[in-house]
Image (tube, rainbow, N blue to C red; front, side, top):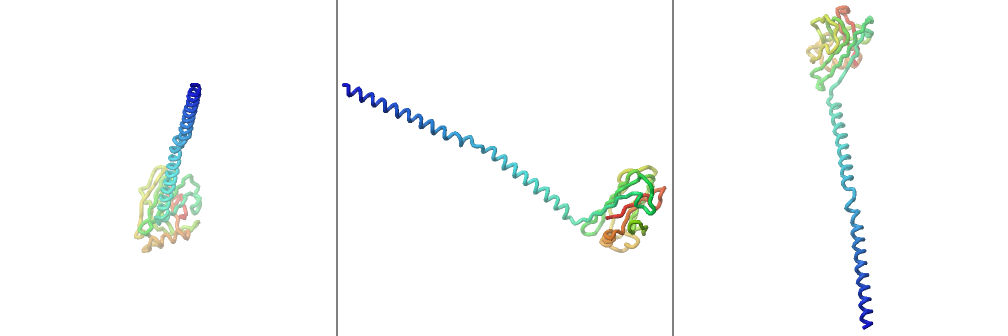
Length: 204
């Protein structure tokens, strides 16, 4: 009878040990499986998305700039002042003039802006180097004469080779551009006070 009791007690100890060991194994398994479920997957995805977006924007702006540079147009400009006139004119008037030559040489777009310029009468392109007076090539603004002090865009438009005068009559826009490139084209703006030109600028 004592032997049976001893055996039962031993069996209970073994069963208890097995149960305790099983719980520890289960706890260990659940603990080790937790970290993968909390891995930073979502933080990695935004980083990848942000990198892709940044690259896309960079490529887009580069392409746009390349297209603008590759359209073949030639742009020239002149800064107008009384100091550039021959002889020099003391005036507060000033201005800017830009030319954009079409890639195929079919036309030239121009824009003339002035500031604080009184009683404007005309604006003309001339052949001539800095400090020299020359023949009229084209009248950019021929009136009507203004009676005010004007600031802003005086005139804007386009012209073709057929409208060129003087030494460029019957020539091409390419000949006109070649003359600019030698520093031999200027624009001046005449006023009632200075009919032959109050402000002037050499095209470059």
